[in-house]
Length: 198
Image 1 (tube, rainbow, N blue to C red):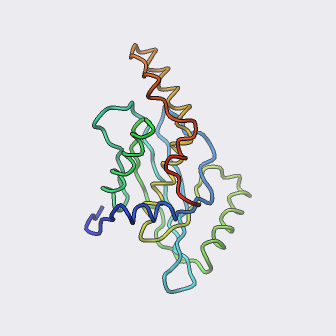
Image 2: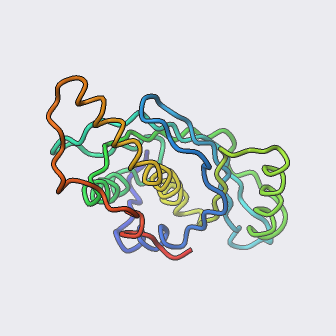
């Protein structure tokens, strides 16, 4: 992606903390296969009483064991450099396996009338009627939409981390790898370390 307008850390944090995750992936991510997280992203138009709508899917490659010097990878996002830096820091803070995230847009910048919260409520009711437990619903600033998607996908990974890491350790043990020491365990609620205001 174009990195000419790369964000600084202050703007990254602003977009991260102002992201509203209205609806998130409602199942545990498997540790043994790749997965796609569909999403609907909503952002207010700066001048009109309309809302930008982006739809797509974030493909998350099955986790890899923690290896020093290996970074989280993001493809198909704007501002990939700072996203990778910040997510890698968070990944190391809580000893997560490393994932590769690839964003695929399906529909970009479709305009809808109303305020983001109104449009979100409409989508939310539709997803409830369809018993859709997979599609994320996100509100954020258009300039920082990729940061909002990074937060959405990373939070899904964090929620599944304890079970996924246990599964990884069990598979490592079966294959003869040494166990990870107790000092490398992640906290019970790792998202609390870097949660922004909702």
